[in-house]
Amino acid sequence: MTVIGLGRIGLPHALVSADSGNIVYGVDKSKWLIEKLERGICPFKEPELDKLLLKHLYKNFFVSNLEIALHESNVIVVCIGTRVSENIDEALKPVLGLAEAIAPYLRKHLVIWRTTLPIGTTRKIKEVIESKGLREGRDFYLVFSPERLVEGRAVEEERKLPKIIGGFSEEGYRLAEAYFKTIGGDIIRVSCPEVAELVKLIDNAWRQLTFSFANDIALLCESLGIDVLEVINAANYKYPRNKIPLPSYGVSGYCLTKDPHLLEVDFKPIASIRGFHSVWIHGRKANDYMIEHVCMLVDMLMSKYRKRNSGVIVIAGLTFKEDVDDFRLSHGIEITKRLKNRHKVRVYDPYYDPNNPYTSIDESLEICSSLEECLVGADIVIFTVRHREFRELEKRNKILKLAKLMNKPPIIIDGWNIFKSLYRNKHGIIYWAVGRSYEYSSNNWSSWFYRKLSSRKAS
Image 1 (cartoon, rainbow, N blue to C red):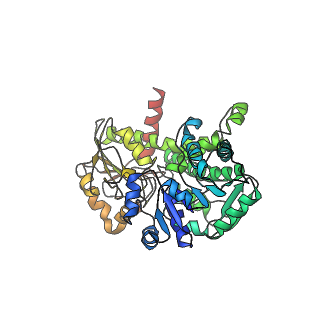
Image 2 (image 1 turned 30 degrees about the vertical axis):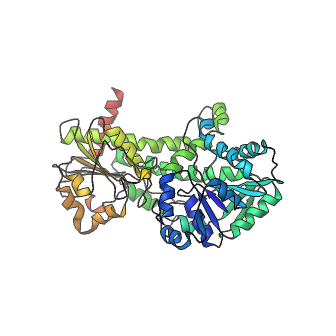
Image 3 (image 1 turned 60 degrees about the vertical axis):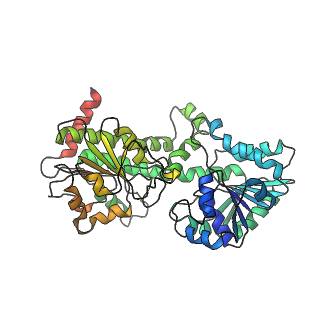
């Protein structure tokens, strides 16, 4: 079988498939990635993946070109990404282009499309292939089966999560069912590809919507001077109807940012009739607003404590979530872009690799090799991700020692409520955590911030 696209979805699938006894040919357009794999080096961090690569490379897993791979295979699993674009036709060009490219090689092949697609795209793929004189159910078989993996547990989840299959023909479903049974997880048959496409889209739209609820509650708590963690923990405790997540300054990443907009494509007629967008789009806007909120907070803090409009700002964490090396559509990077025009911005992330094109960031920034290096003479540090390295700073008052490297008073913006020891602190640190924002040495500082913010908007 062949896996086309050896990124964060395709490579785990390919190696789990090889580990399940299948002979797998991997194809990718990135020369850098192919070179890494041929040397037995994983191009990104994912638990178990490096061991599986070394175990199966040149045995059950082979890096190949498209023509040879399809000649040797009867199953094709497509894991290429969907382009981020407001123009849906532009976004689908790589998808439909690949469909056209593989059509000449199809001889009773099963084609399984796994990456996120707007509703109805699998049917368009079928039409593109059939325009070459082939017919689904006779000359080839096509199904959509959404991947639903989370980074950091991709190998484990690929083996265990249910596999949803939406196809066009009975034989196509039967072949897909037989293949996925070699991988693991329950098989769920749905009536058509559109159902499977919609399942994938609502997964991520729902997740980011629940986070947006928590983030709006956090903003409300900030304005009222109430501890959001106290509120959410009390609301959730032994109450089975609540599963309110904790807030943060960043709900981002490739899927949670992109998929709500793909889902909205088919909701637009409803939105035009009723006069407003879906709840998931409003949720997406609420999550995106947190970036602007942080940037306004930086300006206010500089004005209040430094009596100037610009300073040295440290962004600690540039990946979209903790303990992964995925920088795509990261809120940390977006905050950096907003602040660098009026502040000197230093950045640090333990997962940044200057030699990896997939972790590239703006090289005009001051990129530090350690958090200590970044903090020397800094005015404000913003922790945007709960990396293990940052969580470890809570132990033995490490964060207090690092704060001494900063200009006085040290100002810490905690986007994930990492530093419980700084809450109601008496260490001379100005500490603002999402949803828990006071200056405890004097009057309620959060109400001051919101009064200033309201007057600024009014002007």
